[in-house]
Length: 454
Image 1 (cartoon, one colour):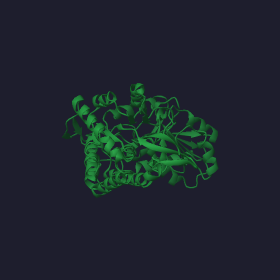
Image 2 (image 1 turned 45 degrees about the vertical axis):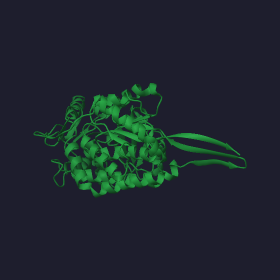
Image 3 (image 1 turned 60 degrees about the vertical axis):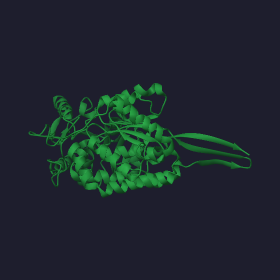
Image 4 (image 1 turned 30 degrees about the vertical axis):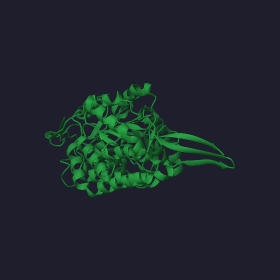
């Protein structure tokens, strides 16, 4: 399998893919090793994962360089991702004992009722390329803490990073046969779906998540899908600093080139401040530098996948055909690399793909609304349900809107944010299940009830 640098289109590596034989061998090794890992004291498992975080920090520069070379994100954003992963590991390891230890629910003379949180067994983690450290840590760290063995399939677009993760986990003390990496594209994913794992945890698109869910349903094992979004954001007329809000929300839309499931994907602005907001938003976007992600000061690198250039161009063309205006950007950048100009469209509406289908790139539509009711109706007009954001000086006003939107996460005066302390979950086409928080730790367990008389 050829690894291509999306900034230069050069082949930077050529690595062997797994096949049915190697996947079968790795699975049997995981199955044999898992019981011993489950019996390892939780305190020891915690220490191992904390050492893994320390190794990530100690090797951040070479790890960031590898990540940037195959995914294309600017070096500073690669460093930010690794540091963010370490922060999540810290929360998960510091809270693992609290949420994974047995709980006594009833203690009375002659009767004890207790819950034990047992590991699922051997789980498959089919992961994503846009934030391989962050979305990986969301799954394989709590899975390992809970006593599971893990088959980790990084995306074919972040395979080198997946191999670095495996190397450092084992250096940290995860036994050799408790964590294995599956290298390859769709064919290898199919092999995992044909294997008898005790749980499947997928991060990626709605289309692929739906396919995986249907394929494994007959196995009657847990299947969690963290999928995409068409995340709405509303800017109310009472915001105090329009320039600051425009800059912050532009970053929420374009950070990591918009290649985030929780990136702002559509913006609604109250008509009283619409013109001022759009002017400041466009000024912010035009101030960014786009170029080789290894250069200092670059905010926008290339897209990670060449095919996405056509997806974005089709969305822009569809919008313009239906009456939208381009204020900046609108097409791929000439030359080598998968670069697309940061693009802002206005005069958009919900007949346009750019306001309905996930873009996953540096494009955004901004729509004028007359009041909160219109904004809320448009925010709710979607098949997705990952995040929603409201900017306003009035917290009650914002929460009244957010409470009526069927999304897993609500933001007031912030956006594009994930915290390890609270669940990360989607609804409808954005998936189901939860990672992070106590819910994410227990997602990798089977509760067993004990009724003990005596």
